[in-house]
Length: 316
Image 1 (cartoon, rainbow, N blue to C red):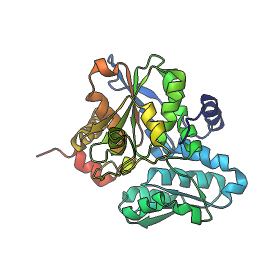
Image 2: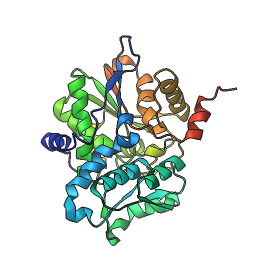
Image 3: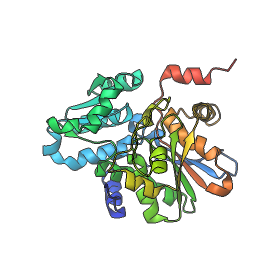
Image 4: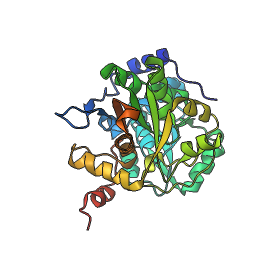
């Protein structure tokens, strides 16, 4: 079982990254109007995603000898970009095993930072993960979900939320493999135990939802535009931690995701990827009495151009 990062560890990680990671703004969903929904805009991080928090902290924690082996991870795109950014920062090589159907914009961004995307069919990616394929390789592997340093780095976001909105009642957190939920949720519960934490998944990939319903990790089919959270199972190590943090898991339809992307773009002037729009879609579907004053983590903004155009195009 993966243990919760301690608040002292999270604070130390945040301090160590203050010249790298942005303290992202917490803004009202409807600027200029009284509102009970606030957006935590991780789209303003380096590489436009929260992933830089955990990945950079994990890479920094390796030390020079560990980094000299070269860095490796598995990613649908955002973790790979964060790893490439960190590798360039430290002057080391990086590679990422990626699904061959990952958005081309994310693949090109990894290459543009000087790292190597290794493209394979999606089923091979998860076979590699389940089989711990990295154990037979020479690289320093950064696991995007179970690595405790990754979760510790992500946890700084929870501290910022409570500092900026001390009376927050609930936080909506997108869930893929669970690294974001594990880190931010640990910080929130340490600082404000009464806060409600809602995990959010696309209805087309309900891995944590189904695991909680079953009382154990299960494998689900993933059919969703939310590539950033399209993880078909929760690991045995992460399940006790995640299930113990969430009030409940909310499932969001594909159309609701599209509606939230459209709303964030046209009304808030924010470009958000599908996984990043999950939290707002869930908050808007949750009665105020169940959630109170809410924060939605807008986790990333790396959306494929053609997908965004298709979502914004007026419907016939």
